[in-house]
Amino acid sequence: MSRIKIELPKNQVFETTLTVRISDINYGNHLGNDSVLSLMHEARFQFYKSLGYTDELNIDGVGTIQADTAIQYKGEGFHGDKIHVAIFLGDSTPKSMDLFYKLSTGTPNRLIALGKTGIAFYNYEAKKISLMPEPIKSKLDSLKA
Image: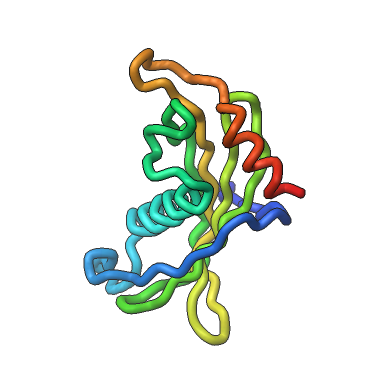
């Protein structure tokens, strides 16, 4: 069986620290796979906030929608762990962008997961994919420099 292999781009654009809550723990007594995706979502929302946005449904007049997701699990997380989430900017098209995530914790640094989300810009009223608005494109381009 082939496995997902995520390679992080070099361009880290954001970082934050999140705490593993008791509701993030599964029956194996560690961070649940669904909660890893939720931590990625929270980090992405904080990234948008750092760019001046307060709502994923209004990024310069259009929303965003997750087009695809990949997660490569690398280690365990436990209740109370401080999870350092680094976000990296991948490829972009006129209508989408790839965001990559590195989740780690502890001393020495333990890798928990690598992730990738394909984010499309989306007009929720028209129910169709939209062009990436120029203001966010400019902000993202400035982070690549």
